[in-house]
Image 1 (cartoon, rainbow, N blue to C red):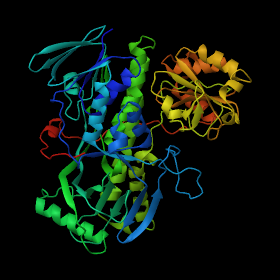
Image 2 (cartoon, rainbow, N blue to C red):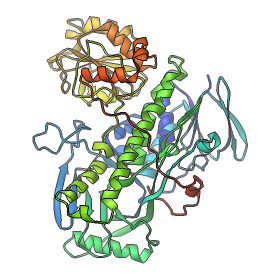
Image 3 (tube, rainbow, N blue to C red):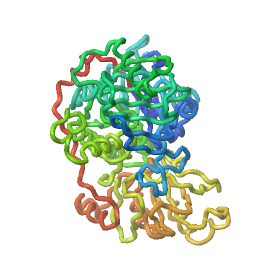
Image 4 (cartoon, helix red, strand yellow):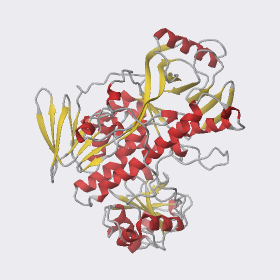
Length: 583
């Protein structure tokens, strides 16, 4: 069968090729560049713990070697420090957390890494992967589809026609694939602008990220962010006025010196300036993410990043969502509705993120007014920014898909657990079939569903002592009969789950359903729905009936997400934006 064609060799395209290879799907990555990325220390990315685990699982060694997990986060306003958060540097952190000191789990530490180091690590992993072919100097100019596949033509030293089962455009904000499909890309240009510097110095908070609002020094702006990297390097961002003039080198050096002096008791410490730039943020959302056998991912499908949200992190979530669905489709073991769910799930999640950011921006950047003096207003603003930077709330929390077309049909055997239906499961310790103890996250991304049994006390016994006792024989028989490949795991405990609960988890780590004990028929129906075969009962009920029953089962039932619609200049305006972006 023909490989999947991936257009674009940025981190999203490279990660998608590796994620497909892990599931037995060959791909061809078309890179319009020479494949040599210029090191830019000021162009960095922040990955939440689950996405950092994803790229490490794909074989990207630079995540460990050249990235830094923050030990903490500080929020400052003027000369005060109203917020401080310590991160969990181990694997026990949680994606959903609170600042309550009595909370049982600290937030998982984000990872900060230069983008060129991340891309290099992914390219090194591809060099070891026989199922991925990376082609440089290949600029796409034609895409044609038919009933059985996609044909693409690239310009270059030797113009070439490529044949694939599907094509995924991961070719960035000015996506050629999107334009060839005629898909609109509405939104807003230059939502925020930041001056950026990467420098090596010593600050009073080694290993901690800092957000400083309204610093009490002249000429540095209303908001500064400092994010640490390995070897004493820091990335510092200064929020710029929306219609300010260009930042000159002298003006940037003045900002650096005054900022460092303000943080270091009035004296500018020695520093080595490594790189500078201007980061311009746009908010856009493609109208369609799938046109038959051609799909969009990453910046080709969406642009976001204001008030602390992370665009590349969301692009990797596209990969996590799409790869297993594309793999099952490629292996001809899934209906067409499975690929449709990629657009409905991910586009709705990004639309909600954009809407939350657009609602927050007037309050955060509105320039004062009466609301500045309302009781608690500044604390509320600080909390909004905290959400975006720390990966929680509507601005930053890992997305859930409670209204997915892949949602399991309601059944009386369902039980509520600490994770709502459609949300990412917690990274608990599990016993694998080979009797090893691993993290649940380590078993994801293999085009197989996970069947997780909650068995208190199992952690102190070797698997061979209980795999033929109690519920295990019946559970393994039920898992074997599922319409999808699966793996049975056992955990000593899962948040909010009763003893002997059975959880069905998608290959991307989202919860399909949780049952009280082993219920083969209900488990089979849930797996069938999760692979795109909606049960007849659910089709007859419609989405309202499914949501009502999901609420009775204990799952969260928020209002349906409405795709964001914001006024936009013509798409060509992105092409005329001459600002050099640093991400």
